[in-house]
Image (cartoon, rainbow, N blue to C red; front, side):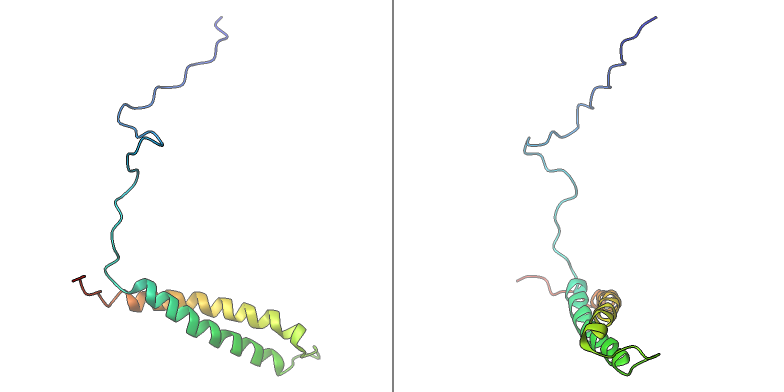
Length: 104
């Protein structure tokens, strides 16, 4: 009966070694559209609008809850985060439709 542990397999000969200077992964490519810019603009616009909408809806009062800043601020921030997420997706979708001009 052999109680020795099995040996681990040898790594393939072509596998890059960390620190060897070889690039691992796909080459870096410059983006060719405005998706990132659109995501930032969409998130900013809809995020600020979501904060205003969330605070405005909370400040109207509902079911006898207090409508002070401490009660409505977290609800406004949640509204802003939700709308910023939606805005970044829509902005990226719209921005990806516009190609960037090639560098001179």
